Image 1: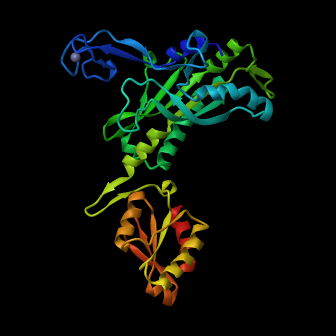
Image 2: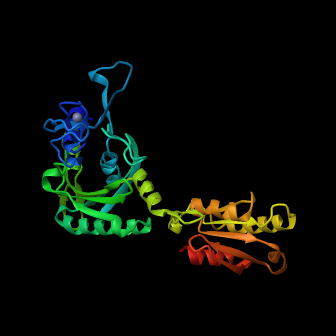
Image 3: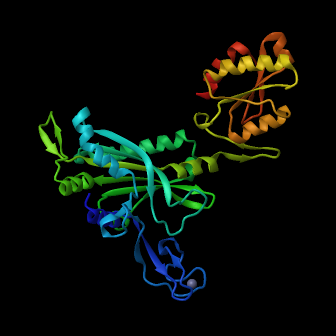
Length: 361
Ligand SMILES: [Zn+2]
């Protein structure tokens, strides 16, 4: 790979932040995040004109530090997909449109890491490059706006806290003809959650030019040969997790619980014997636990009293808790408790699986 291309493209591609220095206290700020981009928010001093600061992580590969080993850690996962493009085309012969998805580490030399896991220098990124015929980009861009909205619903984020921010031409990366930032209202303020960009044919074209390898696609129906364009949904794993936790965290008078969408709850259910020192109850509860565990992620707890066990499952967002008590031994019924309403129902043991299947869907 030609390093100079990457250095340049990284810079132009938006992996750089405009920074201004305070002439008095020498602190650095992102003027685009300040109320008044001319004045230091710490001491009131005058700020310099903003300068571009490259956020690519630089390092050296090999035993000797120097130009020959100079390397940049990837600032996005996307390029791995473009590198795999030819392999996929030659092996699977997919027809347009089709998408390739990858997840992996990316690195940026962030000026202001913080807000827990919101901005870190090492992070996990999920990206899809959706390859299309360039003439149809508007249609597929709309399609992906919709898919992102569906995804936000699935992970349980409140629509009222989501903003689709159309990025103006002057602020977009040079290769992008349209970019939407999807922002979420975090407790510390509204900030970027996802990006959706129409990257045109910039990436494949540049890889093709610099490597000398033909990366065009042949449409067997129209007999056309061209370089596909891409729509790219780009998502941070940590930011998603943070938003989900912020959204799900609930405090009530006497308890804290995570109102996770059922699909995201690490345990779907938990089984308890009412009393841990009654072997008959424990034995019966183990039986139930084993049968449920085969179908749903299921926790077992026999510590302390039943109230504490409920609260500890509430804290990790377990939607249903099943308790085996003395009545169970008589009539094969259990209580099943709802995380959100704390209401309990009595149902037959042989109805547990269908009850969970119905209520967790
Ligand atoms: Zn200052």
